Image (cartoon, rainbow, N blue to C red; front, top):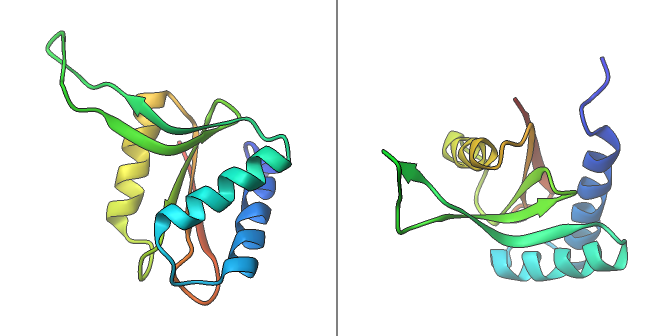
Length: 123
C-alpha cells in the first residue's frame, strides 16, 4: 500500500528531526515553529503559517477562527506540539483543521520529549 503524500510526509518529518536534533526537547512550541519555518524556507517547501479557518453556523460566520500551525504544500495540515505525549485531543484538533481545510492528510509532531514523536492522520 502506497502512503498518500509519502514524499512530502518524509520531507516534513525529516526537517522535524533536524530541528529536534539541533534544539533538543523541552522548549516552547513557538521556538520549534520558528525553527521549522527557517527549515521550510531553506528547503523551498511551500507553507503558510497560522492559517486562519472560518467556521460557519447556520449561514453565519462565527467571529472566532481556527488557526492551523502550518499548511504545507497547500494541503497538509501540520500541528506542532511541545507536550508530554500526543493524545486523542490533539488528533481531534488536527482532524477539525483537516475538515475545515478540505485536507486528506495531517501531521502532528511533538518536540517535548527525548525522541521526536510524530503522528500521521489520513482521511
